[in-house]
Length: 197
Image 1 (cartoon, rainbow, N blue to C red):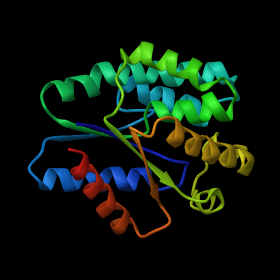
Image 2: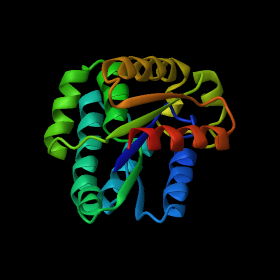
Image 3: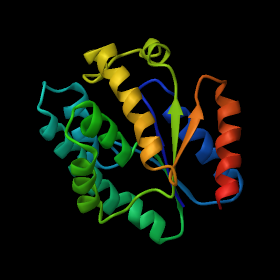
Image 4: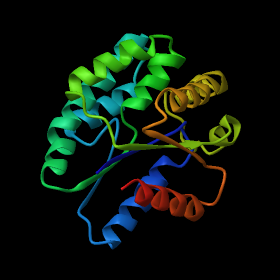
């Protein structure tokens, strides 16, 4: 099973990914918890560059995320799925669709084509979209990265972009109210995942 978590920065993705990993592991399952950008040596280098590096064009940004994702799928995700493990990923393709495809104006179809090409069409069975008011999410930033420093205008665009993606891909994206306590959200995620399997 391949599950991803999406949402604006500060929505609780990392927390929920960790809680789901723990719940699945408690069921005796082999679980790989990973993140994007990151998950590999190349991915971590790209993470540093895109989150802390210089201002860059939208396509350069999209291409760097796609390069990181290609390596991540080849080195981490496909091998884990191949041995029968579950993969829980903090961000995946939908981040690029929301940030570069919609918020940066490159187009969902163009960015999706790029990412399907570099991942050989690999998409999660389910993506949990954590919806949280952008103002609340922004207030959670402790050490803002390059994208977070772009301010509330970008974060509002990203929030709207994610909501649009939920309507474009309803068979895969499950929207979840992230304004509740983490344990309550985790219970809903676990139950909804169990209902789908």
